Image: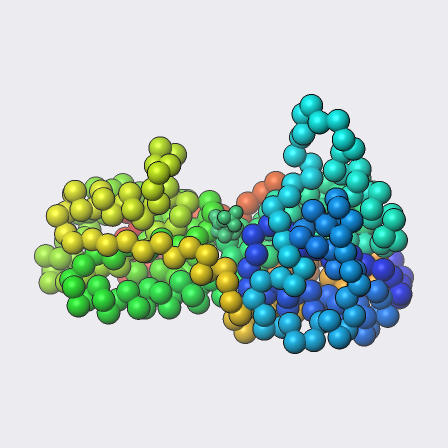
Length: 346
Ligand code: F6P
């Protein structure tokens, strides 16, 4: 960390799958950088693709007005992984292009807003000598080193509303309703929305479940005069050999076979990533953005902003890269839900 420096020229990119709150983070970085530190903000297009192709534009304070509540990202995004080996290719390597363009654009620092893949790339760029600051975003909430990523709260709100709506139709038809939510290999969205929406069964990749236990539980509920059940599943419970159908479809088929109960499935999909961020995500993204600008001013590079016990802190990217934050089997929320009779299929 160094003495506060004003007037730096900072690049910002958003990479990986989008999520609600990206524009709030861009605004948080930009307004703090421009208003407090007199810096220049350069918006890089489409994640690392923009660094490779040198596609960028200056963002003025005016450009940052009115974007707080907007979903998506005004910069665009991509899943470009510049360090992925390109065996046999003759052209200049992508990391080298990024380094050269960083110099040509006259950047003092590059802010990388993204999930695990993006933060790993950010760390590799830091090792190549670039000044980098990371901001953790993803609906999956699976970034190691932070209590929360922005995007997660909005996704949980959307998934919870969907579960609430399934309750009434499940009740009318006395059905088993299976709802599949996103989360990649983590069960955070399923756990939170499952608890918030009163799911009877919650299945997450971190807890090995059996179809038979789920079926037993559902049959018992039916016999206890509970006419319908809600089963919340994370997309990551999908087994390797189920390529052709979703986790919800394959579980639905098994439950029908094992219980004979009327069963339907819903795959919530990209709705969880779209639209305006929740107030909590707007606040978190803004706090992260402002803290990132403060770190740049202090020349505190090679780190990611993070939330720890409701305080904004920074964590070295070297510690974050390559790790995942998954639900622990003994997470207090899992235990509490089990104590209340929720099944995790075990
Ligand atoms: O990481 C966010 C996420 O939405 C995951 O929950 C999901 O598995 C994945 O991205 C979908 O990725 P894509 O946008 O490439 O289809």
